[in-house]
Every structure is written in C-alpha cells, then in structure tokens.
Length: 185
Image (cartoon, rainbow, N blue to C red; front, top):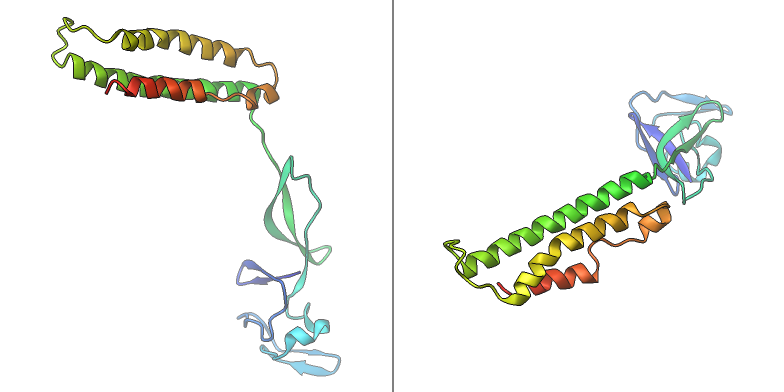
C-alpha cells in the first residue's frame, strides 16, 4: 500500500494511479537521463518513479487491538514512509463506571416517576387524594425506593472493572417493572 501527501492531505492508494493528480508545487525533473514533467501517463507501470512523484510505502504498525487503535496518518521523514500513530485506549476507572451506572439508575427513576405521575393523573386528575389506586400499582410504587437502594448497593459492591462491565442496569427485571407500571395507563 502507498500514500502520498497532496495539498496538505495524506491520501492512501491500494494501487498507484495510471496518471497521478497534479500537485501545484510539483516541478519538472530528470531521472536516469529522462526528463519528466508534471504529468506522466502509465506511472502505475514505473515503480522506479513512484517516490519521485511522492508515492511512498504506507506501513501499518503492529499494535494491540485490545488496548490500542490506529490514529492519524503521518509522514516519517527519517524512514521515508507514511505510517499511523498508535493511540492507547483510555479505559474508564471502576469509579467512573459506577458513577455512570448510578446516573443510568437516576434516569430510570425519572422515567418511572413520569409514568407514576401519569397514572395518578388518570385515577385522580384533581389530586384530591380521595381516590383509591389499584393495590398492584401501590405495591409497584412502594417498591421503587427499595429497587433504587438495591441497585446502588449492587453498583457500590463492585471490586473489579470486569464485575462492573458484566452488570446490566436496565435488565429484564426493570423492563418488566416499567411494563407493569405502564399497564395502568
């Protein structure tokens, strides 16, 4: 694979083009007694001229895909090659994962609060407090604080990132809980 700097942008090539793009700064040159101009047809068949026209090897460095990724292309002046920068993946800490999970729990609580409010508006639109709500609804609403506390305790109990990564905040139990609440709408 080759790459070439064209007007400040590194372009990559699986194959060298037959006729390269003209670069404004490109000058006429002589190579092995032959004078070449800005345009040469059949360049793809003349590998000895590729570097003279700015086509250099693109080297893909080895890296660990588990902890790194390939960043931007750059020109290595010393080795006369193009290559990719290797960028280390920044993994979240256990505390960051726990904070994100707690935020997700808060979002679920907010979603549930909206549903509960909508149900209350259906059964008691004037909020007189004189309406009797279905007992199943009351049980669900009363279990909300327990579910939040349980989720926070589970999240706080993680001791490894692996444990945290295997945790699911909006699991089947939460989905069923929300579905049961929505059944009162």
